[in-house]
Image (cartoon, rainbow, N blue to C red; front, side, top):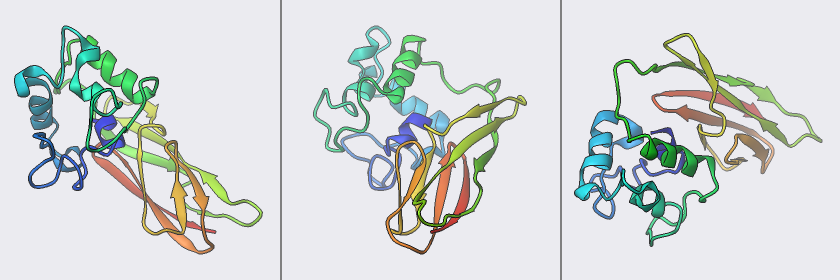
Length: 184
């Protein structure tokens, strides 16, 4: 679900709107992982996820641009996102389990920053702390949503100043989110 979120598929402007898009309707921001799993793996004659030929799965072909997708290319075939989905499908596309560790909390560093010229960017690092006591760097899979146009955030959490001023970046991973206030 982190990959689906990172690609923007479960936002209101895409497959999570009231009617879905292109015959696919999933929960907003992954609020219903079990329901989304059923929709992705079991519906549409199991064409979205092809357990016999993972590379033929629509969940890989459409966002990587191999098949026409109104949402455009969301990730490339050599990306971490593609690899994660392909490996999940190749492993039999296991569903949600009560035994799977959950995200207990997120940690973002820096958790706030005042950035002084000539520096014009800050790199965020996102760590997910799981219910089994382990932690994982999820910087590349987290979602970054700036609250205004004073900053831009790249795929991997580098926040770049576009204009001087204050901004906040909402950092989201699965069911957790944090606000990171920044001033340039």
